[in-house]
View 1 (cartoon, rainbow, N blue to C red):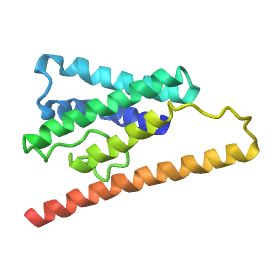
View 2 (view 1 turned 120 degrees about the horizontal axis):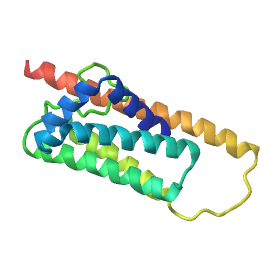
View 3 (view 1 turned 45 degrees about the vertical axis):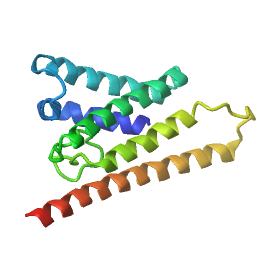
Length: 168
């Protein structure tokens, strides 16, 4: 989760005006609140990334991360219901183009899977002592999870590109 939120925050920070325009495109927030919301989202993602990195308040961090992904999914769902599928998701992670990934139900499913993983992390553990192999498995699993996330993001980008070619 650290990599996910850190890369999203870095992408938003590097293209702050573009992200503000993306928030405007969602047509959920009032125009007056866009600048504040832009900085708030960037701040929350940065705090979550650092909290995951340094394992600060893991239960609160998992709940806050799940809540943020839920808010993103809700905003995407509102715009999909309005028929506004041309909007960039604003994610920034593994985006194939500067325009980003257009919103789709696939993003809601991806976020839903991430929320389930976050909530599963709150389940009680068996409390056994970790040994060296556990650290290796954790590192390799993290790499696989990141590659899987990048692959899913790329598939969503490809799907959006193919759909736009078919309508052209």
